[in-house]
Image (tube, rainbow, N blue to C red):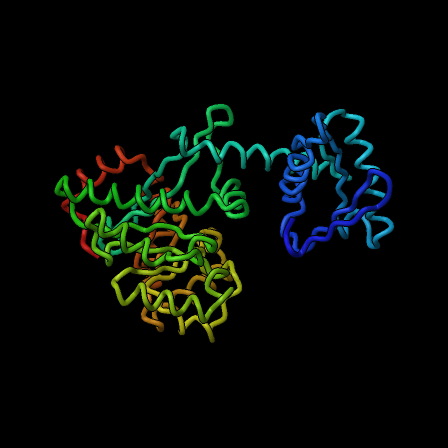
Length: 363
């Protein structure tokens, strides 16, 4: 149990657990599983071994009740549903939460084994200079190829990894793999390119993050200025003072920093100029709307703002020549997207860089 949780005896063999500060209702399934495991521990009484089982019903405020009495009644109903299934189990009052909880447990359990079973891999999407159309760098993108489910989107498994703490070992692995690949390209005689790596909030705020980044760069003999860490607006705004200090330290050591998916968060211009940022990445949702007057105006505003702050502007999700030409005319520096190249396996990306190395430029 966490310090913020409350456990009480309700009567007879029934107990109530009040979980506060819950970000995802279906995430309470992890707590329920821990409780069932704890109860199932063998208890010794004299010469006897006691095996205890439990069933848990879960109700969630406010969907399942606005007051304690209703929430308890609905949790009780869900508990009896769990009992009817037999054995130690838990059940949400709402069936859709049951489905989500089962899916979440599946993802967490399988994700824990994905690294050791070599199911995770990195693909690399090239970034292009919009004027010269030269390749200037790549973004490392995490992929999970499950033996049964096939490819599972990062938008599905990354939030689960964040919540259960797996994002820390996964993030470390991603940075190491990206630097290993960058070193392999350099050893093969390919031009120096910027390697962009996404960093999660939990990873960024973890202990000794900066030290680990610099140690990884040193291990693979990668220059700090050849690494670009992509962070989100929400990460910047969560703890701006701490974030600014860490970013400044990384920048002093040469590491580049980009704001990913710019425009989708809750950034404030009064804060933005305070952060030591090299690049703004225009989210693909804005690029999609560039053919409309409002969309065009929005993208132009982001580009002008970025240039006024002396930041490089990168557009994501460019899919047509018209989008690329419009962005170039408005002063956007670089772009990535299916129009130029889809994310490539290391082998395919190597082939592309070898055929285009006369065009690639050092950023």
